[in-house]
Image (cartoon, rainbow, N blue to C red; front, side, top):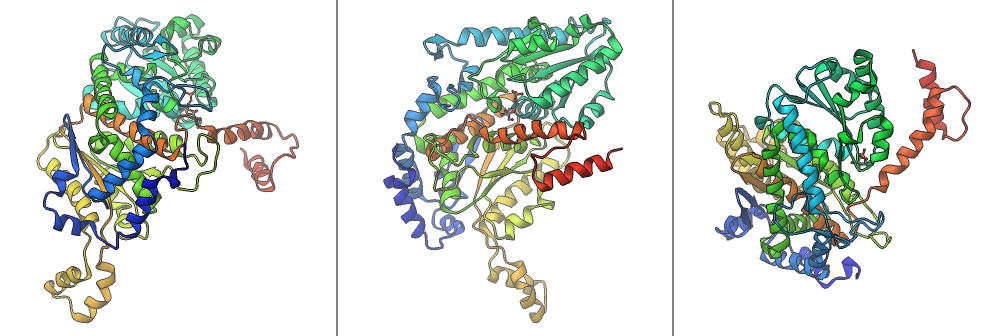
Length: 547
Ligand code: F6P
């Protein structure tokens, strides 16, 4: 593939950017009363408004030309057709097959994957129904009241985020817990609330070799056996979701209690697979299928819509425009929907582990910025924490605002106040406040002239800060499935254009290797010589201070 920056559309975008000449988004709105209609799209019950960005018709034209010249169509087809889009691991990435709600077969090397996908979905449904209706009980015959998912990264963040987001669809009598950190405090604080006779542990690990997860799983099993005594009782209280049958059985979980998935499911794209068992237990299979259906709807849209009407393609292109031409280094995710409070953390892994790459698929160092730093918090909390920097700081931070029109908890004026703030922030970021406006405002408030001039620079908001807005009817399973799939595909679009592999994660390996080497230096006082002076000094201090 030709170098991205050599493509004619990239060169044209460079020129377009150079000729931008300080045009402000607010001026683009003043000049075009139809700007919202022109730069927003609706898909089912979800509206995507991208009008508050630094873009015109011409920008969209050039960005979609870039998509053509970077052969995005070919890359999308390769993704859906099960080609090895993850060449460094020699794998396909077929998370879209997991939510294929059509009758179409999905072939991987000539074999239809749908029968095995549907078999595991059925196994999950049967098991979840048994737990939820009380026919699956603990070893003393008591009902299961608590489900503990032990996993990390993609084996934690997806199920955790969705379970939190869909809390209104869960039942009080079956509580969900998530343990990910190897810091024992998380496990111990969780176990404190539990009765070994009524809890079910889900050990979620694609590889079943992740140090944190196995350490937590062993400690949870020790805690359980300290009470239950007999090994045979483990079968009623521990199940696994993994691709690795052998390791699951070595751990002592009966393979009959294993929910399988496959190497072509990337960890951070796995909530649609058996890794979603915690979700199914929490919300039931009917709702889980609606989540899958929402994602499938977006998959179809992504596969078939022309670029200028394709929401994930536009999300990806606008993000690239902000990152590579306007120098934005991060992307804020700001849900005005408290149920989405883990959505920014979930997207952080999805995006940063996928697109945090500096070499192309061919192994060449890129000469343009790739994946942004993704971060965020729910509104309105963030407003009272970090929005100051977004409004008046020196950095350009594109924001994604998300909100439901209808709350699951209608209460007085809460939702109107929430939505007023949601709308106000993107308007304020876009419009800003000029010196003339600030001066006029202070003069109207009777601020004396000298004081007015002193305060003026502090009261000016430069504005022109880009944002996208996602507005949806209600945060239900289908809408959530849509939102997640939109971001997954946005990440894929950007990776395709940047020519990087979004499906590997070699960058997490070095730290893991070093931790393995450091562990013996912490567990014994044997002399060690392989560490740098700082690490050695810190190890010595740990020994010194250890109680
Ligand atoms: O260390 C990163 C990672 O490999 C993630 O990509 C993955 O989601 C996580 O670890 C957990 O891996 P596993 O599901 O194999 O335990």
